Length: 101
Image (cartoon, rainbow, N blue to C red):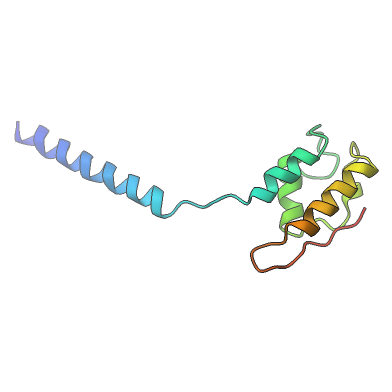
């Protein structure tokens, strides 16, 4: 009986510790990635060199992508919308991500 009680208490304490750690250490995703992904065609074709539109949007926000035309399914309107969105939504430091068509 003592073993069951000990393991129960230990499990509860470890579970509580994990719950607190998950809350304290959580990372908030950059909303811009989701917004840019919505602007992309959504083909998830990989023609841009990334494994889908989400990865491409993440690369845009991180500044890895300088030329949007690597997204083959997108058109001129899509490029302009993404460029406008990036100008209107700088990062936390106030820096604007610069990309071209």
